[in-house]
View (spheres, helix red, strand yellow):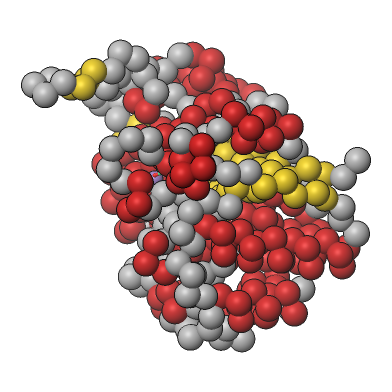
Amino acid sequence: MPNRIAALYGDYSGPEMMRAGLAVLKAVSQKNGFEYQIEAYPFGGEAIDQVGEPLPEQTLAGCQAADAILLSAIGGPKWSVGGQSPEAGLLKIRQALGLFANIRPTHIDQAIIDQSPVKASVLENTDFVIVRELTSGIYFGQPREEEIDQALDTTIYRRAEVERIVRVAFEYAKGRQQHLTVVDKANVLATSRMWRAIVKEVQPAYPEVEVDYMYVDAASMKIIAEPSFFDVIVTDNLFGDILSDEAAVLPGSLGMIPSISQGASGKALYEPIHGSAPTLANQDRINPISMIRSVSLMLRYSFKRTDLADQIEAAIAKTLSQGVMTADIGGQAKTSEMVSKIIQNL
Ligand code: IPM
Ligand code: MN
């Protein structure tokens, strides 16, 4: 039975990104004997156009049946006003599949270090991941209210929701540099103080991991001022959303960064952290690396093919060192040229 991969091609630059990722997947698989089967489903704006909703039942069923899900990017100006939004589909799929942990790595590629707005000396030894809680907190809390004169959002966390995300974060820390930073607003928020109490309960199971606590305002400064301080950050849904965009500035382009959204079942969704870049769509200009790295993470974590993932990462590094880069990272290459070069370098 081949490995089943659901592919959600998405909107604007989404399809070309997906094609780039799948081309590299095909090449690395043929070389190393990895068998898989791709099933494509409409999602986001494309699905709104086809059937009137961003996450059609058949798409959800297909994702549930798959071993892993690849998503490129959704949304854009076409669906920005009124009616159904592509983004609502994203929130819905996360919740429906129980993808409660979002992992966003910040890794600096030496070849493009000068593209970063932050000095190279500050970026030295920067390599951390943000573990963001993804299916609770203020994004989903009830009650919600939206009137003209009054609006209400609710931040709510239940013990089990905090415990499971904290465990995921400790596991990542254990496999990395054994340093976990809990980011919150415990000087103000009750949910933050509850998180801290639960971290202290889980901590004895991970004696090798050093834990520190930081308020989110201070952490947002430190991510820019001293990013090498961090190894693993664990934080709630909203803080994680904000800090992961901030961290994405460090490598020099959003176009470099993949992410994992994982659940208890072991199923996971892999996607670039950036959007569908409408102004770049269909011009062979989009940086394909975030998508190719999403494929690499999928091979590593869902299919345990570290060998293939390592080959892809090495091919990306080699391609960058040869100066084959898209415009967002200071080069002149087209998307298709980068993809060919990465495949050639496998
Ligand atoms: C992200 C995005 C989403 C989020 C939006 C599109 C709902 O910003 O994946 O970070 O806020 O989670
Ligand atoms: Mn975001």
